[in-house]
Image (cartoon, rainbow over all chains, first blue to last red; front, side, top):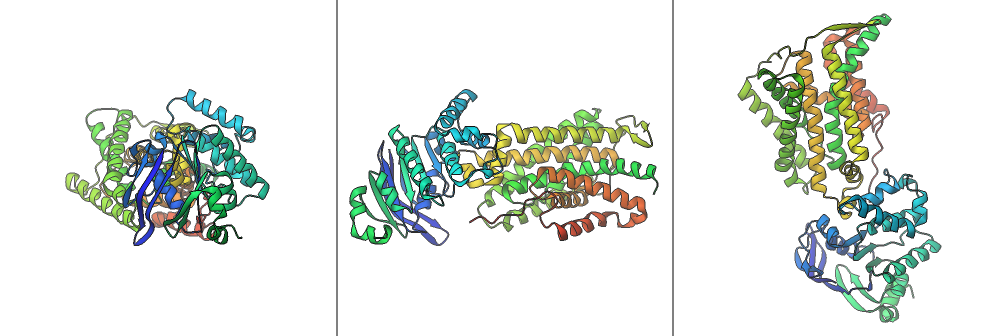
Length: 234
Length: 293
């Protein structure tokens, strides 16, 4: 479904990604793990079109999207849950969701999408007129996920969805990710919480200073001594 | 100053202030979205006045003049953004700022070449009756200014609060990066913001030309600076702040003149700017800038 082929990204003189290749198959959860500053977010930004790769191809559903604008990429079916949630704090919950459906044409489709999000996250419906900035951290994460679902993405990029959440909420968020996946959404998950990420993913990639150093089935990665030492605190 | 004079000066001040507010909105909206102080904005206002004047000289009424000026300035502002700012979007923040100063000088020079440096009078397009309401007098021109400004500001508020594009503007001004991740076409939003600001300024230009019976190529310099002060006093980036700041500066200026500070007329706005910023660095209604990680 998604294939990155030799993608390199520069920020000025700094090389952020070097020759990154990875694939995500339809129906999978793929975890991308690595330390702070390894280039995990950059990888997701590049897929979403926020950052232009200097080299390499990004194929989504048979199309090269490496030079497309972010709004066209969203329209093709890639949703993004940004790191740190990034809800629009001064806008209401409902308006945040509307922004997620920006590429959706027609009010009926938008209302249907919102209905589905509210069914999944009843808490958001209760607070639909509240400003997003007044929500708790867990609710904001639900809003960020709901907002990304509004465009009915085939592939969902999730950037550190567990960041800054209490352990109980982390489990809740991961349960939601698993559920979304079971209902047919393919997921590329970036996490510092490697343990949780590998426990729900089928496959994983390890990113170190901008390069993929390890890849394999999640179970195998979780058992790899190097990964255990570096990312699982074992 | 007795009550009657005070009330009268308030009316005059609000009239002047609402024209500042119309211009200030463009500064504040553009700043809110792309953090650019658009120095050419005052000159778009000047162009609006010239276009309005030209339409009036062709025999049209003031409403048509305002409408045509708005359309013309909309096109000009969108073009300016496209040509002078967008190519510099990813360079340092100072680059588009300098570019905007360049555009400003270009527009002033162009109009000076075309129309000469001298102020041109504005034909009397409305019968300027003076009405007495209670203690104060108000003229037809003042009523037109107040009504047009109020209608435009309410319209703007509705656009920002209710329409899809308006919501996208708010989302973009809060977080441009995330807005584009949501599929919002940020370039379209930026063009739209410039267009809205230009439409407001163009109306302001025609109204001021008519009010002071004078249109000239450098008229955007002082008006632009004062409107910029108004935007900063109100809190740059805040739409209600720009309106409040504009009215505040207009009233203060007129009251200052009435109190005998006539020769300091232009200094009043800048003095107030310094004073307000001393106590409220982010302006009357501004949010303190949050550092994003």
